[in-house]
Image 1 (cartoon, rainbow, N blue to C red):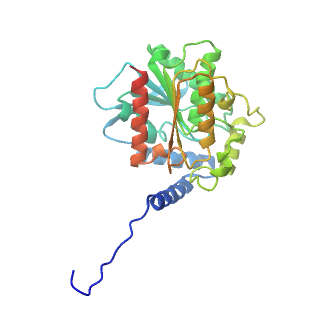
Image 2: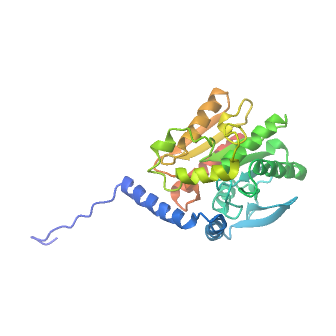
Image 3: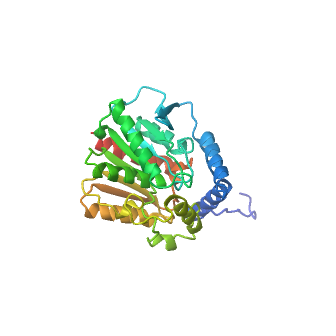
Length: 309
């Protein structure tokens, strides 16, 4: 450097500033998808799934289960066939599809080298509770007819799909059927009474969910229902005898309490349950094409491998 010249120092942005910028971007993208016109909302989600969920490394096969559509997601190479993942997509029970869920199911299949079955359960408000749980049972029974045993199946889901995964296993338990090998829940929506502290403490932080949106989804799905019904709010269920469960949540999401309280209750009821809270992350951050999303999927795979030994 020549004498008398000045060095220009650029300050490296902090991790917190980078995270705030990323959440701002997520908020904008989510705002483009969300629409009070529910059909447009559903279409926008499907466009995102088609854009971000396709890869030459993955094999997608359509399936019809009675009158319900769905798809198998597999890695396009030799892979494990003994175990299978039954995936319940999110979307507040009013939106979402197996196509939208490809942002998650392709990552899950790639990280585990297992086949993933995602099904298009009936959506509200056209088909409110208990339609989704009935359809989840259809998908479960379909796997049993294919020759899988209950202990060959891992049930997974995100957001409302996490709710549905829990509701399905509660229903299997009620019917005294053999339960799946394990549960994997990403940002599960477990309490439709919205009684957790994070609904207030994270209200300004969460770039994806807010109270008015949840209120619309609750009205669509469970109008005039008892919101403490465990098949609607699984947090109020009895988890005695439940299989090992792995829960992931973002530190900045309003459903954080839904995850932490579920974990606490499961531990109290002697379930082998593990919770990971990802600092600076938001609701179902695993959808994003970011390193933390792939790291989270690797953790899902580690849990699944561990319980399948």
